Image 1: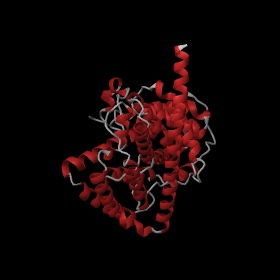
Image 2: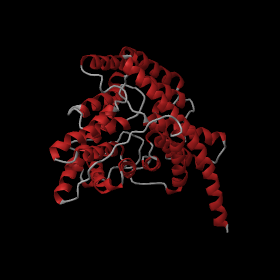
Image 3: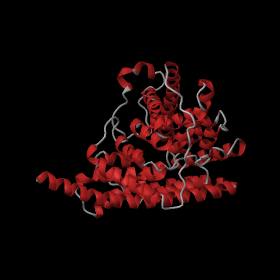
Image 4: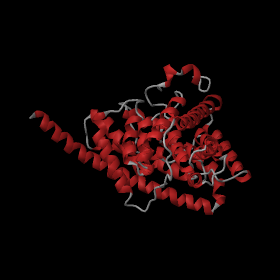
Length: 414
């Protein structure tokens, strides 16, 4: 009888809390997506706006240093609290990261969007925990639910969003106690966001080839390429941030001069990789991408994040993986939409150490018939990515550390 009462209390409690988090995070994320769409449209029709990039960068650094408290830690702050940390996530993080990311996109910084949504969801959940005066041991669940809700609403993938929030905390382990509230908040956030006039990208994989020994060999090569690129992406961001912090330690100067270099790149070479750059994905799936797209997006995103702009990494990782997949389609003689879809998800998996969430995302986006080859490529990319990850607060080490360390350390040395 006691177990039945406990179950009923658990179900009612977390249904109400999960719904509250899902509704709130869904509204916030939808407003964020609408704002991004507006500023992106404005930037594309008013190209002069990029000259304000240095001012936006300096303003963002100033706001975080003088008003952000510990909010400057971004995703890593939220992840650490989801693991059980005791550091406060200030509610002021929400307007800071919202405005900072929107302004970065307005002026052309090559950053993503999921980091903002995850941070807003985590901060909102932590604030609700304090307002509702819930027990401290519930805090981890609330923050994780907020993270999942934010991710789900941004990409329209509630299953992947919920598992991502759990998997990103500790590599290779899921906290099953949190599964119900995290999944519920993710589903509700996704449904709430869809009530707004937002658009989630959808693509069709027109052909999935049959598995064979030759096909597995080709997929192994593709997975290795995706993994090396994803691991290199994470390593480069960490290296750039550390170098600027330790060698220069002048954040205003770094973001000002870095912004000037981005403006020069846009004026002298191309504006294709500014902002979200979503056409890169569309071009990859349609066969109209350039062979150098993944290189351009890679380095401009690494540079934008490395000098201090706010945003995220996931959407750029999708674009890098998709355009790299388009290149591999010709080299490996694989159907275009098939390998592009694999790259879309696998580079993300390599850079975040979240293979299960990425498998589920691929199934949600592209259909279940892609599951077997997709998971094989994700596993290979995960192994080849080394120990690197874009979230330094993530606990656990890559499975490859002991089994393949001598091989991969040639590419990723500690």
